[in-house]
View 1 (cartoon, rainbow, N blue to C red):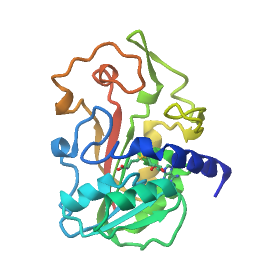
View 2: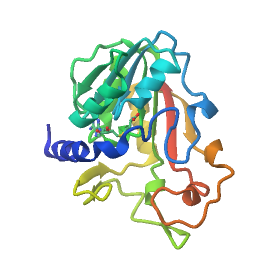
View 3: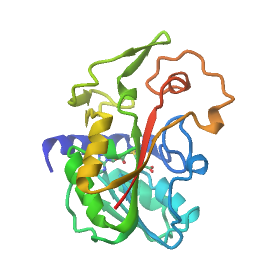
Length: 250
Ligand SMILES: C[S@@+](CC[C@H](N)C(=O)[O-])C[C@H]1O[C@@H](n2cnc3c(N)ncnc32)[C@H](O)[C@@H]1O
């Protein structure tokens, strides 16, 4: 494992508990529409699904209990997340692997009806390899769906409610957070443009079926949105989509 991944893995192990049940289906992300509103997944009754960056396992639980998936597989970098997911998924016989998504780990090829990733794909250090691997895991006709921060959202900063561009959207680079969730848990993440996600999907062989720049979810529609300078806020999301969702097919 390269140094960057090793460092992120240590930090994820430290902060995993903050993410128990957070960023999990049916939610696609902070303040966004849900799967109940968007209905993006195919019929997954008795189908095989693979979760990339399964976190605490709540999305896989949703796949079993609400969508009727018959086989639950997942990959995640963090051993702490794997332990959490094993608890969440007790009795559902998941097949969980602790590994980086950008690494070949002999998962079955041409096997899954659906591969998905809720708020995890952007953590990859190698988007091209990750998307090629995901493509290889899918059956022909299978779907890949992911949600992640809208690539421009990360550059929009609120200062006393005035939204400004922070840094350069043009320049894709590695960004380091010294702390995460207030903990001494440095995280290194690639910033990427929207076109990079779309073009890498196309180059991996996918056909893009839908691109969603999410609106605010129904459950937040009646809520007040006072001025907020937080990274994620209803105030900011009312003005700019926090989440990008893409559905593609092999
Ligand atoms: C916000 S959580 C995802 C939540 C999850 N999708 C759910 O449904 O609960 C992000 C996850 O990505 C994982 N992760 C980060 N980098 C990764 C990588 N390179 N390969 C695999 N998983 C990674 C983290 O360990 C963490 O569990």
